[in-house]
Image 1 (cartoon, rainbow, N blue to C red):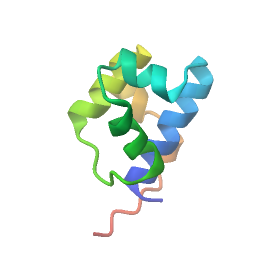
Image 2 (cartoon, rainbow, N blue to C red):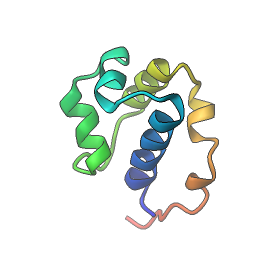
Image 3 (cartoon, rainbow, N blue to C red):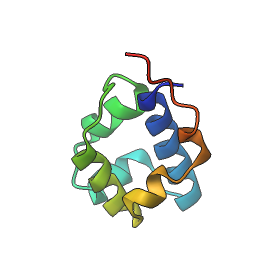
Length: 79
């Protein structure tokens, strides 16, 4: 799995766990809906750490919590 796909999947899973929509997450994370949508659908293949930090803020979790998921164990690092 690519890192962008893992990030997308993690965001969707966290939204489901916290019962929050993608649009609501964008609002509480101070991101545009188009930015978050681009990450989730895979158009943005290299989301910045600042963007992920904002998402964590909106989800009320740390970066460590975001990346502490088994989905990140089998990332394809081939460039």
